[in-house]
Length: 341
Image (cartoon, rainbow, N blue to C red; front, side, top):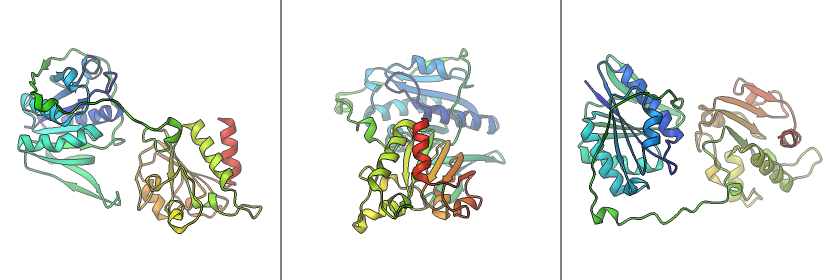
């Protein structure tokens, strides 16, 4: 019988992030699906009281915690020691954690310390004949592989957007504070502060409700026979500012920089979405001035609701690739939406 352990770290305010709550849903589902499985939870952070209360009704038989100033910030040495201690205290055979930057860095080392194995960026699971089989995306999400392992403990990090965020009423559940002693060598790394770009300069927003994808049509000649690059940039940035959407780009648009053409200064290959770019997971998506052929279908496969703007009613988006197609001029339509916002 497997013992499933859900692991999470608190955010700076002591709460759990969305990725952790989504993974908790998956871990709880897995515990119910595996016959005879025992479900445990483990938390690390500076103060885990709020997080304990938030997940107390998730069905875990016990919550293990490691708390204190040494565990408030991301640091490999202290995180690895804390997670290793929790896994051993719980006797976990399957460890489930969110694929956050903090855990992606430390979980492989924890699996090594435990003498187990690890699979990262898990995108789903099924239980067949009482055995767990996980699903992972390969070749930029164009293929999905299903695999299982006999080795234990088996550590898994789940990508965001796979499950709905867990929510539920508080309940009484036993807790155990796990003692972890750190030496001076494990405290050598210290966090001195954070550096982040201004909010108006950040166009990639993974937690945004809307993904707005701009295509190369924004840089082409418009109905008056002229190119309106400055106007296009103003419209796009204005829409992003008002809607707080995340900005995506077609490959054709970001490739223009290598061809010596004018491009938007706020857009790079990091914004690229599609067959050779990112595969985001936003509730809704809106494409403007880009075609709807296979590259975008691949990149948008996990978007909940897909909409597009195109002057051609017979474009690729209209062939069953978009839930809604607006047959209109993107300059005029996005400008009008920005005004309404």
